[in-house]
Length: 198
Image (tube, rainbow, N blue to C red; front, side, top):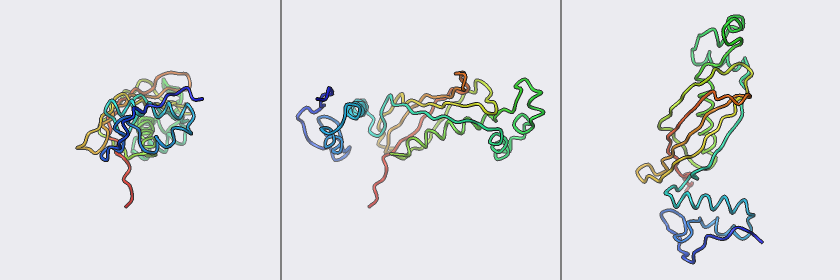
């Protein structure tokens, strides 16, 4: 028997504007799948319900996502060339080895671009994200062959009818393989429901 109680409050009317039940704030698909779902699926539904109760419709407040990436020397050179960053620290092994860093380092825009792209990659799997504002603090150089773990968490979200989506604030960053913070970041985005084909 499931240890997760149903959020049903016996007010079973679907709101045509939101697509949520007026009583329990679940979608019709979430209601239909409840009986056959496992505890982890039910907990995920309850997290979404709580998020909706707090004003979000598309995203789940508190949700987090991450990805890992190793920056190879050729990737560092190629990216710097693409963005016209001619600093020899990104291109010249001999120059970079003689520097305080001891190896090639990535242009600050490279790990930043990967970190921001993670937002789009994550939300575009179920919605339409659009970036509005980003805050980036570069804390430590990213060296060739560093492996970065990039992470974001939804800290606020509220439906904005004028945007036809959730206005979402995220906090995130990246750490290297030694656990050292290399980037701290904030983001404000709008996440809109996927348009249904007609």
